[in-house]
Every structure is written in structure tokens, then in C-alpha cells.
Length: 239
Length: 356
Image 1 (cartoon, rainbow over the protein chains, first blue to last red):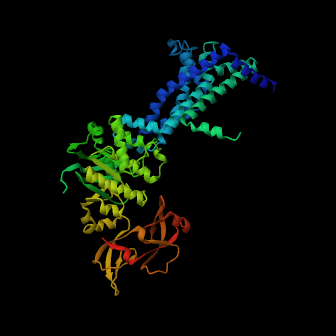
Image 2 (cartoon, chains in turn cyan, orange):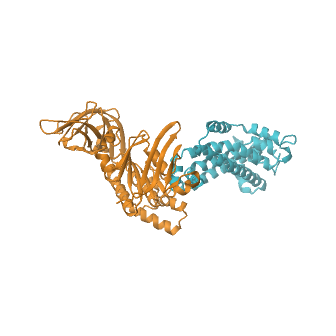
């Protein structure tokens, strides 16, 4: 029990201490997961558009594949990537192993199925005639697709947020292909794992709290940005 | 007088949706400046034909021409600028009324100032001035359909396609829409093709009527002809609600009995020709749970097979051997506590039966 209270006290001390080591690891976590989620968004959105807007043979199979891949264990993906990126592996020449690039690539691949599946559902939930409404208003095919994406914007943002959440909270990929090199590839989750194994529970708890605050903070910001009235609702809650 | 120039031509067009043949060897010319009504039962291909005329669906066989030019993949997007469709189901973007109406103008790269002016004008036309900033999807059903119409009207396309524009509207909103449809046809010379089920609309708005059944056009002609001489088809496949065809028999008291089949005989107040088509307005029919003791001559027992609610009104289909559409207020409907499958009586006066 003491360790938990110590951990919480330590967390606040750390947060307000201005410790550059702490800010470094927070920065790297945000940067790696942010870039990874962004990359995944760039390729997952067109895939979701294709799956959500077009009808073709094998579509259900592809959707099923992405749904199943959401549950792909992060350590298994980490291991697979390690084998590919290690010196003896087919992608060893890239020299990516134990670099931020490996973490970003791995996390981007990890969150792709999640973004594709949630975004596809969001696009499919838009009335299929919306595309025709845009076309008959004079939109070109690409403009009509954008109109449908705009209608699905809440669902799309939710899929992107979910992707970022999974990226920042995952451990397996960052640990295996990043190597947890202090000040270079260590992130919040790898540090928590490392500190726990060394018995430094209070610092681990502190980092855990920071991770939670980041995830909650970013998601709350998204909710408020989409619907500022949430703030008024929070203000009206019984004290 | 209308100039007899075809603005759109459909030649021997066959179209499949999946494995189903939805349009079957359809040939139709839409004359410039006319209002053409497509009449037919559900599933007869009216909506599909409108989508063909909006260049949203491509034929599997046959061709579509607009102002003489054949529609091909290469000119599809350019041709769509000349024709626009208002869908039966009210479709709106999840944004303001202004942005909804302005969408097509923005696609046409019209200047901001002109867009503002055009949108204001068209909203005045559909009696929605001052609604610009309102969220379109939060308006009432009738107001939403008027936004949808304004979205199309503002484009001033040569061809305006309306898919059952008043089907889901209360009488007030329906009459606003009908007024606007007539106005744009008369003043802007917009050619209009509309699908409808509504007897009043089909009889009063169009210059010509095309009857559709099972993906085919069975008759085309001036509205008056279709409703007089050619009305057998109109009644026989239920193209419009409460229109029946039957053999007549005079009674001793000077009224006429029309046998419309399925053991349904309707008494009318006037003499009619031996074989005739009759219409009973859904508003003239009284619905009750027990037979009414009244002066009305026509009482039939049946079951409710369909219920749709439109604003303050409820429209019920009652099967008495033949299907009758009955329109009552939603409040009456709620108070009567009837539902799908309920046994009910329909009652109407002999004088409510109109010969067509």
C-alpha cells in the first residue's frame, strides 16, 4: 500500500521537478507513437475508403483479416520485425533495429488493422446514397469521396485516436525492436517494464500515472474539440 | 405551347442491379420545359429511371442522350452538372442549411458573394429564409425536404428530377413544395421529371404521365388522357393510391354500384359508364374499430397492413380484399390504439367516390 502512495507522491514530484530525463521519455513516447499513428492514418484511411465505399469480390475476406489482426499480440509482431530487421534478416541492410525508426514502423503496422476496421465501420455507417447526393450536386468522384469522409469524420477521428492510444500504450514492439536504449529508444512503457523488473516500483507507478494522464488528456481534448458543449456539461455536473 | 424538343432521350435501355432486371427495354423522351410524372407501384423502376436521368447509373444495354449528346464515361461528370436529383429519402449533409444548399455551387466554383446571394434567394423561394445557420439535420421533416429541394433548385440545372417529393410530407409542406415545383417550371423553364404515388400530384402538376410497371414503361401520354382513356393500367396495378377499376351496375335509387373485384362493391352517388375508374381520397375515409351507424353507404371490414407516420398524420393501408389508403391524424391513430394486423372498419360516403 505504501508503495502505491509513495508512487503517487513520487509521480507528482517528478512531474513538477522538471527532470529532463522524464521529459525526454515523455517526448519520445509522444513522438514515436504520434508519428507511427500518423503514418498508419496515411495508409489506413485509403484502405478504409476502398473497403467502405466500393464493392468488390473478397471484400469481406479483407475486412475479416483486418478485424482479426487487431488482436495480433504486440510481442509476436515485435519478434517478427526483429527477425526481419536483424542483421541476418532480409531487411537488415536498412540498419533500423534498435532505432526510433524501428519502433515507429512497428507501431504503425500494429495500429493499422485497428484504424482500418474502425474507420471502415465509420464510413459504412454513412448513408450509401450520400455519395450519389454529392455526385448529383456536381461533385467529381474524389470530391464525392471527401464529402462521405466528412460525414464520417467523428468515427474517423475516433479510429485515429484509438490507433494512437494503442501505439503509446504498447510494450512488445518498442521493447523488442527498440531495445529500450536509455535516452534513445526508451519510452514510457519500456521504462515502466524495466523499473518494475528492477523493483523500483514508485518510479514505475509515477510513469504509469503520466502515461494515463497523457492518454486521457489527448482523448478529452479530442472530445472537447469535436463538441465544445461537453465543457458546459462538465461544468453543470453536481459538485 | 411547349416546344417539342427532347432534352433527354432514353433508347432501349436495360439495367440490372445485381441479378435483378430493374429496367427492361425502356424508351422515353423527356421534352424540354415539361413536367413529366412517372407513375407506378413500388419496385416498378421509377427511382432507378430517375437515377439514370441523373447520370448516376449506367445502362447495361441501350443508351442515354442529353441534348443529343450520348452519355459516356468521359462526359459523365460534365453532364451531371446539367441534371440533379432530389432523393425520396431526405438526404442532407451534417452541416448548416447554408452549407447544404451551397454545396453544389461550391463544386461549380462560383464566387463566395454569388453563392451567398443565390442561397438566400432560393431559401426565400422554399420559405426558409433566416434558416441559414441552423443545423440542417435538426429541422423538421418538412423543412429538411425543403432544404433538399433548395439544394437542387439553386443549381438551376436544365433537368430537375424529383423522387416522390411530397411522399413523406404533411399537407402544408407538400403544398409549399408543389407551388415551388410549378414556379420553377413556369418561370425558369426547368424541365422536371418526378416520380409520384400521389393522385392529386399526378393529376395536377404534370403535362405528361408515363406509367411504369415491372421495369417497363407501359403508357406515356398527356396527363388528361392517362387519367381518362388510358386509366385501366393506372388502376389495375395500383400506380396511384385508392384508384380502382370496375364494372358498374345501376341501382333503383339512381346510385351506381362499382364492382372492383375481390368481393368489394363500392356505391357511388352518380351515374357512371359501364366500366369505369374511381378514386376515393384517403382523407375522406373514416376508420373505426366497430361498424359505424351512419348515413355513409360504403362500409368495409379489413385489417391494417401498413402504417406510416408523417408529421401530425398517420397513413394506413387497410386490406379489405382491395388495398385502401386511409389518412387520419396521428392523435386519432394513437387514441384508437390500433396497430398492424388490427381488425378495423373503413367507411366513406357514396359522394366521396369520384369517377376519373
